[in-house]
Structure formats: C-alpha cells, structure tokens
Length: 509
Image (cartoon, rainbow, N blue to C red; front, side, top):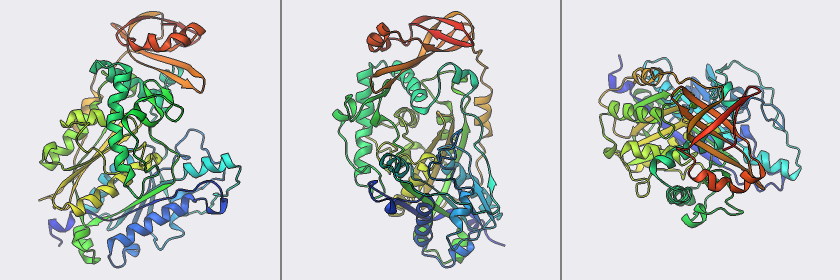
C-alpha cells in the first residue's frame, strides 16, 4: 500500500504559448485547437518523465470565451466538441474528458477538485488545458479574412454547461450587464469608502497597474509586453479612453489575445514511478472555493466576502500566514480585485509584488483561462525559489466565485481536501435584501457612467433605503450628458428619487 507521502497531489508539468499574429497573412493565423495542443505538448515535455501522455487518464478543458456567451460568437465555424477536437491531434487518449463551466475561477477550482481525485486514487495523471484566440478572431474580421475553425470531431465528453447565472433578470432589466459596467459600479463603491476622488482613484489604480505592466514587459508569454507609466495609465486619452467611470481602457482586462496554457497533475508516488525529477514537483497545500450571492444581494459593494473567506480558509489550511507567502498572483481583471485581496492579506498594493504574469490588462486576459497561466508561472517561480510559498487567487464572474491555491516545492506534512462549506454557509446565510420595483427615494451606494466614442451613452445607480435596494437606469438628457462628470463625482451617499414605470426603474439624478 502506498504511503501517505505518495498520495500527495503535485503539479509536474506546465506549458504556455502566445502568438502575436499581425492580422496580415491568414495562413499564419493561430488556430484555437492548435494553440491548446502546443501548450499541452510543452507541459508534457516539461515533466521530463517517461510515458506521461500514455498515463493521462483525465483531461479537463477550460470553457472558451465563444462557448461562454449566451449566443456563441463563431464567425469562422463551430468547434462542436472542443475537448475531443484538441485531444484528437495528440498522443493522449484519456478515459474521461470534461469541459468546464464558465468562470475565471475555474483553473484553480479544477486544480483543487482534481487534486482530491488524484489523492483518492480515482485517477493517476490529469491534464488541465485551455486557450483563446480572440485576438486573431478580431484581427481577421477587421482585415476581411475568412478563416475556417470548424471541427466536427466527436467523442465522449462531460460538458458541465455554463454554470449558474451570474446576473438576475432584475439586475439586467435595470442596467447591469457586461463586466466593465458591473465592476465599475463596485469600483465606485470602493472609491467612496476610501474617500477618493475619481482622479485619485485613477492615480491609485495606475500606480498598481504600472507595476503589473513592468512584469508583463519581461514575460515571454505576455500578449502586451510593454511597460506603461503611471501618468499614461491615469489620464484619459485616445489610447486610454474612458470605458465605464472610473475605468479607463488599460484598467480593464484585454481579451484580444492568442494564448494557451496547460498543467499536468499527479501524485508524488506516480511522479516518481514515471521518472519525473523531484525538481519539477510543486505541491498544492491549502485551497478554497467560495461563491458569493448576486451583486444585488451583497451587503457591501465595496467589499468581497468571497475573496476574504477564500483567502482566510486557504491560509489556515496551509498553516501559514500571509506574511509567509513570498509570491502572489492576484486576479486583476479590474483594479478592485487585487486591491481588496491586498487589503485582506495585509499587503501594500503599491510596493508588494502581486502578480507573476503581469496581470490581465498587460499579460492578457484569455477568457476563463487566465489563471492556468498564473498557476504555470507560479510553478516556474517556485521551482527557482525552492521552499517558498506562492498564492494564486482566481476570480470568476463579478467577484462571484473565488478560488485560491497555495503552492510550494516543500511537501505538506499531510494533505486532505479542504472544505469550504463553512464559508459558503456564511455567504448564503446573510439576510436577503428586498429588491425594489417602485417609486421611492434611496441613497446611492454605487453607480457607473458608460462611455461610447462620443461620450456618455448610459448610466445606472444602485441605491438603498430602509425597505431594500433598488437598481435604476439613469435617464441622460443633453444637460445631464454635459454635467454627468460633475454630478457623479459626489453621487455615492446622495439621496435620489427613483421612478418605476413599464417594468423598469429610472432616475434623472
């Protein structure tokens, strides 16, 4: 019988790929399936073991961006069965293939899930892979190229679907929608809590993200490897235009990427059997997976209970403090996520290193798969800084789902799957907030103004009163369009009148 040390889950191989196609020669355009095969091949080669491909008995793929949307975007054809399409061109023949749900938390959540299955002996060697070619898709459409990415490869796959809805009908009806506008509202709530003006918020966010861009500038797998200065990042310009106040373009994850990444996981005993050198082994220690309520049901939009609880649980399970962690990758689709994580961890976001990749605006934001790159980069960092600890925070939805993993080349004394049931109970047991569909007055908690090429196009507010919470669209007249910046600067905390008509809430500010 294998000893307990032999059942410890371990990452033994990582692989990443990036393509900087310029959109000119269509024959050189990256292909989504080939991108993933490249990362998988590199991850298997990275193990330096024998017979790794033959030993993989479970392959799990991160759901792509086109397959994550309500209406899939497939201008160049549909890949009917992505897991089997990718596997069909490799030496792998796993018994089981899985296609994940939607969410940037998924890479870390799946490492947590698969580690338990490996430790229990349910599987011997597992693969996680994903990739995006949204950059090539946009470039090809702009250039008028007709690419062919269609694939009808068939085979057994467990398709987990898109997962639970991240927005309610009430939220969508009254103004919430795409990530930038939802996160921007939460950024405004955080800005107000910190007592910052819009420009002060932008200067803080830019001070943080300038350091991220410096990391991306030296990362060979970054899509946008350029260091951008604080002054550029903090000022609206043609190259850094307003999106949703207070966010400018380079405060937001950039999805026009061609990137893929893969991980190979097994147990210490199987790694030894396969001849994988121990210098390649990186162990998972504590971990956590916490879901939060819909935005409209969270008690304080300037905080994230899910991030706080996930970090606390993972650290406690690892029996270490945040001060003992040497390396971090805190998900950075928008500034509020690393800012809040740093706050809960007791870190200084302006001097501590919070990313090993360069972050989603500068390394690139490959849909749900970003944290596969973060984990791969963390593994490489820990292999050189042996014995140190690294923490990865993966975020899904609108701070809706959080997954944390703590890693080290130092093996844990023992390993068991970490239960996040208590954390989930804490978020689920909070009092339900009544959502208002009526004429009322309420105090603004959060808001954003959404910009187009010619200025503000729409806006919404989130407000509270003694009876509950209301989300309302802002009616932007010509006068309001001219004055919206001045109005919005002090909007949080102001009492406004909300009118309900035709099934929706409105306010004129």
